[in-house]
Image (cartoon, rainbow, N blue to C red; front, side):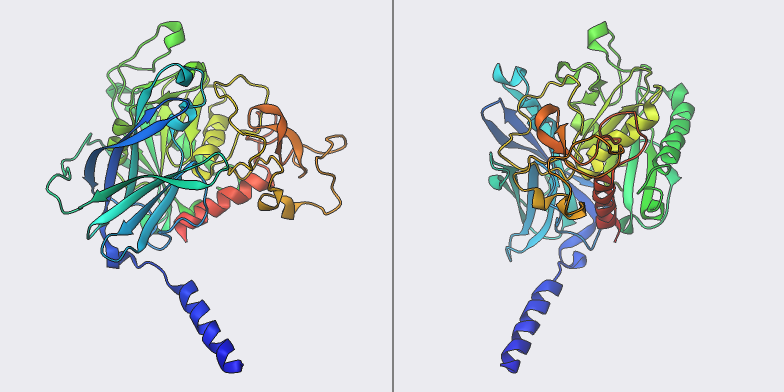
Length: 424
């Protein structure tokens, strides 16, 4: 019996310790896969666009397999010879948000989406999975890729001046954030550099970013625009800018995004990066972010500092909006019979997977707000853009509104987990 136990222990520990070794499968650079995502509210399809070699791999060389499971999509990279899984990441997309709008019921649209991963030494299979109606990942598309093909583009796209903002160490051991300028002319680049410093200083005013500041690198890239400012279609304002960002995305006035994903990635590739943040040269209130896609914020608004942090909660850690009173374009974004994947909201379908372990065992679920402080943990109804059926961890937090200047404990823990995944 003892012998059998020892053998079983050896097998289990061997399996648990087996990790993908970066140098066995990858070069120290990045491969970019651009594809088209086309469809409407009811259906969608994927098609290949192009492959691009980029000079820097900014991600971890240890945590190659996604163990967190956030995002509406997950992509997997398999070595073709061995069929070994050698890389995976979760992400979300602008297309997926658009599918929930009224416009998507009327006609089809095509969005460019982009995957990046370490540059493989040999041929690979890339699988794209998305969540079904029950939030389970299902395979939707696969691409067979020969990284040694002469059709892989190697020219440098949108070369731009880069500069250090906050550098703590080697990229492979840090969370690397790249800040891109949008709507800044050549003569306004000094302002952009100042705004980048404001962003970094603001980020480290908040926990857990302050405590983990030595786990983070921040770079700036000067994407020069012809015009100063940004498109505001509702006011008939149109600007010629480097990244083609616009207010009124999905006809939501404050939603400030770009569909020019290629330009965003081209400029970002000037440095090693894990997260892309676009600073937009405008005084108008607005911003946006999508998990592992990019984040944006107006850099000259009264609330810019809080916008920076709120939107980065979405882009970095997949945090959901905890508010429910603002008008948004999305419809039925969180079905009440499915547990959302976002860590800071719940429908109570599978609350055990969320922050239940952080609660006092005697607390009532749902929780009455009477007598509670804004950051007291509970299960408060209202969140994810709806007043009923979706619950948030606290009465308020930075993911709900500007009446408080702090993340709640659930959000802090989610952010900390992501930063450490990139940097440890």
